[in-house]
Image (tube, rainbow, N blue to C red):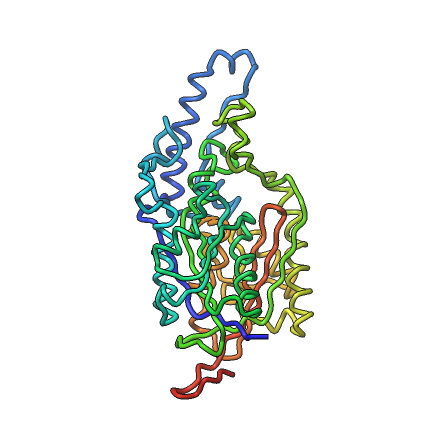
Length: 384
């Protein structure tokens, strides 16, 4: 079977940052407007008043301190509480494709490749901008790639699931070079009016280029030692927005049409699942969990990540073993573990082993075990 390597990664950071203080100010203004609007019903006990948020509450609950967003003004408008995006004509590059191209160009440059050298594009994200044509095909055209493209959605595990599809395509010979992009415009599906989740998500796009090891030219290469995917159905993280809504005659702005979760249940159930998944995957590859130099985990909740690592290595650890990007980026759905890999790998040495792992709605868990390779000298095609 053909060896597969990751040769380039890229990231698109949106132009705006929302701090917790800004977010709390907007949410509390919204809550005050709603309490004023429903004052009579609140007085009779028919409805409960909205509870305000606080910076302390957000940071204690999640570890998040800020998030990037494509549009800031709409989110912070107490009379709107959602982003505002200008509509584009069918002839214009779509918003999701635009940010994917920006991240892809970085990944291609790092790998020493051009779009024309790519055989397949996989667009994997928690939500797609439209049903069809596939976002991946538009991105394929925009970067001048060959072959084929398709979209896939496994919520917060979309990136790792796509990496396995890319690696398998290369191993079986249907592609030599595959680009995985994860454009996560999470601000559009987050319910900014819900105190329990209004702080969770941020926008971003990541890109990963995988290729056949014997053709790689990049100065940095990560061998994909193995991938593993698992799913188990749960309603604890759900979003019911879809094309059937218009036929159900339901309110398009109803609470179930945006992100919602049973946070405590998710924490309790997913942590042991993720730890066991990683441990078994490593064992099958003949690694102990303590032999792993770095864990690039899904970035949803600080406490969740800390407990997963504690279960794996049996003690408290710091960012050296499991780097955190959650405080700066917030939860970026499928892109979180890829951001961690993109930003926190330069100090690793040849031979070091790491795990990229995601876990999210579905439930879905994906792990990618990688090893940093020695880059061969000029004229030598081997890597060890």
